[in-house]
Image (tube, rainbow, N blue to C red; front, top):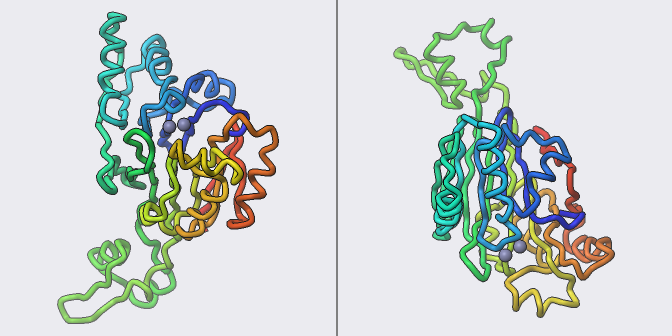
Length: 291
Ligand SMILES: [Zn+2]
Ligand SMILES: [Zn+2]
């Protein structure tokens, strides 16, 4: 994030609070920006480079000290459970809350969380160690009925239930009722994709095609593109190419190298390819409105 603390993002969907990556200092930042750390139900860790997870043990310890009871789910790469378990074993801590760990994989797209309103899936990125991105996709809710239509022609409960699920209905006498006649069109389903450290690979864009907001790392400027390739990172311009190829609606850049004092130049490079780009800033909320 802009301000140069390590990566951590809170994603809120309704009453559900998720945390993506947990770099060093995350809990201090959560407190500073009054983000509701205690409400976080699930943590997703992209990879085991320190700038993406070194704040995790501190956060888990604070939950214990504040006597958290709510279960906490963690999704992360192989080895993370060993790091957590070994820390708490050696500190002789029995956590006050249940911790459920699930290992992520870099084999294709995998649904990690299936919430009634959204899913969270992981997908592979191309970095020096196993790394995944994450995509949060809103699910279709029940359709709302067009009231005037119901007054014209009352429907059975069965018909209403089926139409609200988005399926056409036919009764025993063969009379048919189509969703488009009886229901308002469904709102477009929102999505957010998080691409932490990765080399430029156009093939990966298939995992987040048409996403509303894409967060993408942009460690380097074009002049340092060789360095980007060597370290399996992207330039701002490459991040913009990824957003364009994926047909994203908006691009948020982050994970900037400390070598650049002026990030506006980096932003300008990206905007030559993908105009709807912003620098992500610490403590700022980026809403994705329903349309
Ligand atoms: Zn990394
Ligand atoms: Zn990193």
